[in-house]
Image (cartoon, rainbow, N blue to C red; front, top):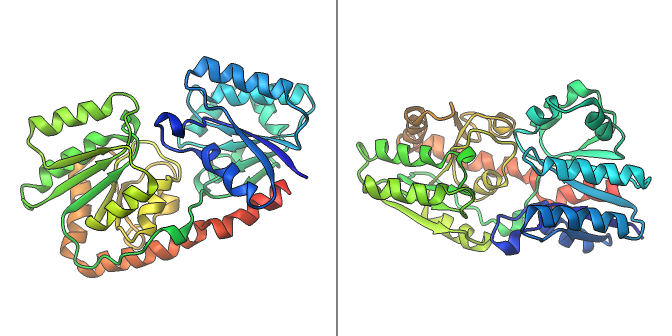
Length: 335
């Protein structure tokens, strides 16, 4: 039987947003893959030692599956891959994050050779596929981010109202301030506009947003971290989804919004132009430009045909991200 050790930030139970290692092992076990995910230790240093110790001490696996981010956890992946190479263990990197190309461009030849020597590099977005072509790696495979489409009840949006929904971790890189600035402008023309922001605290941004909303008396609802079921249910009360980030890859929250029928207005950064077709499956605007984002929102409010077309087309687009289609790609790789 195929035996896999999946290494990543398994921190959903600690209050963080779920990552690949939180859910992929559960899915693949149902398909007959013997897979275990680590590590759930909150402290970064402790998590690194746990990972390295487990990799060194564990019985031989068929594969090590290593989540690779652009943040400081990039070095977790590098060290894990190095140990795997020393042990002559097959290792697979799974790339994540819109800033990863910048991290790779700054990496040494030693680190780049570690990626080149990997059994496989799993790339989850057309954006990262394009960005990594220049390295001429022959060991890459495209496996997109996925959702279980059956869990996302589609609601067609036609005549939309200025009820805005934002779902992401509260971090500066995701620019939640832009959503508040958009609401402030929108209220001048649409006094019934409202905004709901869903997500956990990450770097102090949530408290900052609460203070800004209070100072300007903005009609903003902060829910904190919600489960998938909770925010899917909440989504039925809202008509437009905002993605305000400065850096992005192929965010699952945007895929989920499209599946639910929410027209998306998003900044055109990173992998977003590979996910959204402007005017057909979403509306894209320049980053950190509240005026342009408000114009995108107003297009949907004043043109019910456009809102309906985007709502329908977006749902059709994300059918390609359904787990029932994507799982065969994982099984082809691992089994």
